[in-house]
Image 1 (cartoon, rainbow, N blue to C red):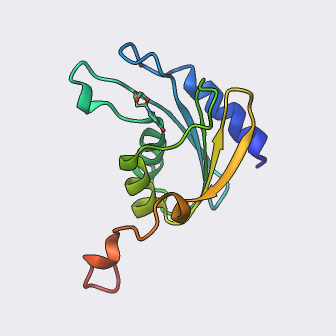
Image 2 (cartoon, helix red, strand yellow):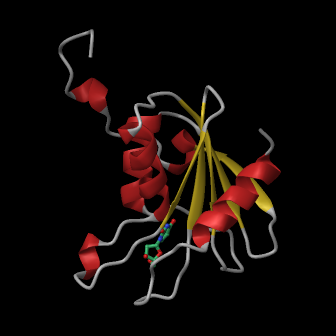
Length: 135
Ligand code: THU
């Protein structure tokens, strides 16, 4: 699947954004290693801290569908600057999706390519916790 396809899928997901408090609409398209696409948008809550970002929506949809191996995520917003995932999403993506490619876009549709490990170096992860080598 081409990055352009991911871009259009993320844009379509962005349309579903529920963001009446910030009016900041975000969409994400997450590709599995097998080539399956999951999308997400940000969903805000009147209890603000319960808001979920587009990236985690996409990832949680994928994981809840049984996916475990991921290749990349592309993120869109309406901001002029390249959108950059928040710290919480960096931790969750790094922990659950690994060192995937992260494609940041700006309002003109330009793309900037990063690795998850660039966005969150020296990340905390499951290796600190897991003693059972099968997990
Ligand atoms: N947001 C995302 O969904 N992803 C990001 O990468 C940055 C921020 C959302 C959370 C909130 O609904 C709104 O954007 C403003 O922070």
